[in-house]
Length: 318
Image (cartoon, rainbow, N blue to C red; front, side, top):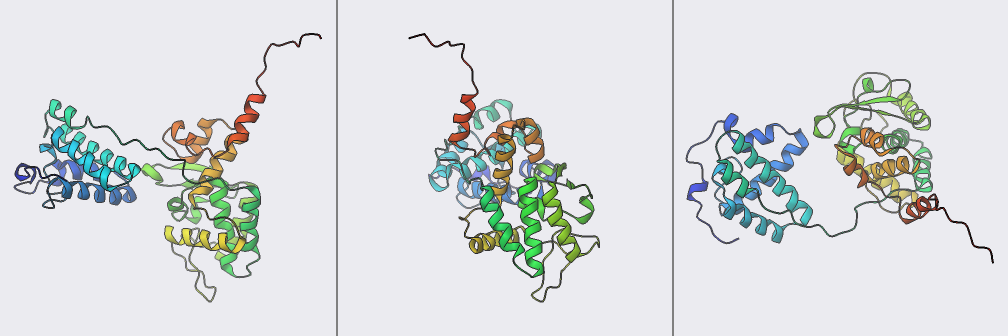
């Protein structure tokens, strides 16, 4: 990145966190997002200050268009379009807080945030799993006579049956599950709560797991020691990833991510005729536009859709 004068960008004295734009922005985020965006802001601060500042020592209110344009160029050269856009989003949000805190003039703010996002030209990430693949995954779990097999079957049933994120599934407690299959997802993405529902078959698999786990309060899905002892504490989201990879390899299912269960959930509901607003609410998305990005039904669904269109046409007699 070309060197720009940085003297005015370095805070001469620490600002109270209550009036520091980066601190105010980060404090409004959920824990997972907070860590990610703080890393982004630290990277931006180092770039624009030639390594002299981090997110808390940079004077964000002093940034002008010349700085933000240079930041965009540097980020685009170093990171993928998606990562660059995520970091630019954090930058814009911090400058918005600087404006709200009256640390920045409205005209300077408008010019500073007037930077375009980087265009993303690539295919949609991930895929939807077929019914046969899901059956194969459950079979290897149920063929496993250890407590891990029963737990992993319950994990897959919840991921597939509710479309929850892996960070959400490890945050579930036993008290969040009712006997009719209703699950309370607490503090999901964006710190939002929502209710999801386990299908009957998924609920049966979870009940099998509870026979092993027991009914004592605590995390719904738990780690298991090598001897088969269930530890009543939370699994990590990394453990979910490793379990999915392990069961995919054992069943011969093509590699996929835990998030692909979420894509499958949305795609199957849309394919069944469920309206997109209902799918949005079940998935915990902020808008139907986000839900539409999870649709992996493919070209056959589009072809069948147009077959339902009627035209007022009468064949001519020959």
